[in-house]
Length: 104
Image (tube, rainbow, N blue to C red; front, side):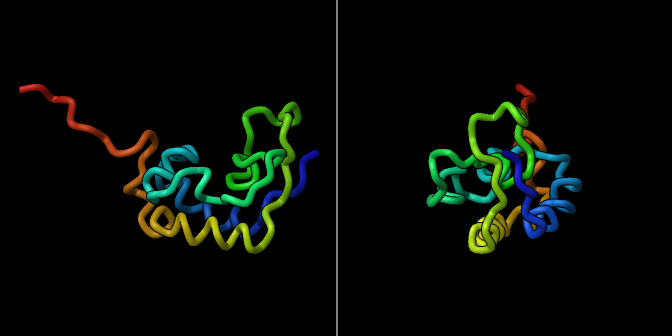
């Protein structure tokens, strides 16, 4: 069952996602220096981490995990741990930092 996405997280992610070209959760976590598991270590096995944090899930209604709304404490924890992304989203381009591929 889908529950409403956290309005706090929606507000937190809206501008930086747009500015950074909509990077995925893995790229955002890597840029912020945390793993997805460290982001919310208290999640239950049946929680859809992707939906809870980002408000989207590629499986939609067919997802086997629960699409629940993040609690205030969970939203606060995510926003604290992803502060770098919020403050400097341009440093987290889609796919991570570009590498120099020129061979000389």
